Image (spheres, one colour):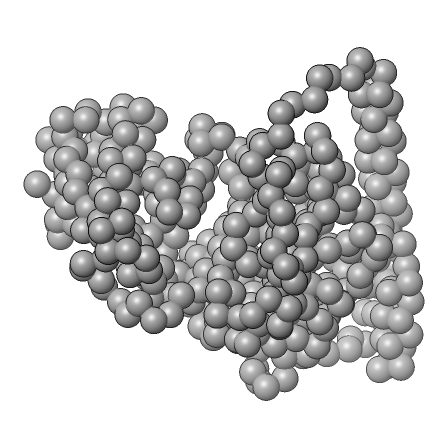
Length: 446
């Protein structure tokens, strides 16, 4: 049987995309080799799934071709003036993401997140923004059986982990994913990305942390994929519970259209057995029985089963937080709610769209309790000038007040603002996780 599995997987790496996707869904939950009769049924299911996937892929190709022809028939638009991002250059020794003039679209507007209900956990426990790693190196706190390197990308802030060879990539600092946690990271691909292999993201209960290659045979695994396409993408979901494959599905995902050139913010929220996955403002998966209640996830895997031409994945800003945000009780009973879920552009008071869920959370409490007034207090980490941080924290608190008034109709007279800069840390400022905990917004009942 091991020889049979080796032969099958060897064929998979040379198989067309549609067959690979289908076979992964069918075989993703396999662990200990089944009996021959069971294995035959799995292969039959894989063949049926492959036929369906092939038809779907062909229909998608025909639709994209028709759209392309329609666009070509339109008169060319006047070129837009270059933006600062389009004019950005790549620092020496860094890798630039390819860009195509006219392909870059605007990022989702703040209002686009109106149905976004993701709220990060209360305490940030793990963060990696790759600032401690040198460009060109593999990140020190990660492990892999493939290959990757830290790069900077023209027009996109921060540092990115470029995955350059097939295999698994593990942030080894993530060692505990309890029954209530959130995971966030940014993902981007070149606008020239073809429809090659999908990126797999897996929450895994490893029996032996020293044997990560055995992740697929672990008894509890929740996996979803990000598979960008030219104008839209796809995502698959596979769940394995107590060594048995329980569910699998595939969905179209417009957020993964590669030609936009914009990073996708991926958010994952586990609440006991329920798992939700968001890509930007869209909820892609919401599975009420995704995992067993006793699953003890202790590892996070990013996996590529193959690398095709023009296929590059970049990861950034991996963040894990734990604890359920009990907003109502914190405000009404304890008198203060602290959130790390209201995020801003770097050195700016501009609120990011993915903050909408946290803003909506506090707005709901204020709407239902019309007599409650709050003071909004901004806090920063200790990086940079102390005076600049104080000013930034005050401006960020004012931006939160303005957003609550504008987006949720909260009376401005019920809110006052202040900023403490770096003067009141709640964690050490010597690690990415500590700094992330210090960057926060507090709502204090008055």
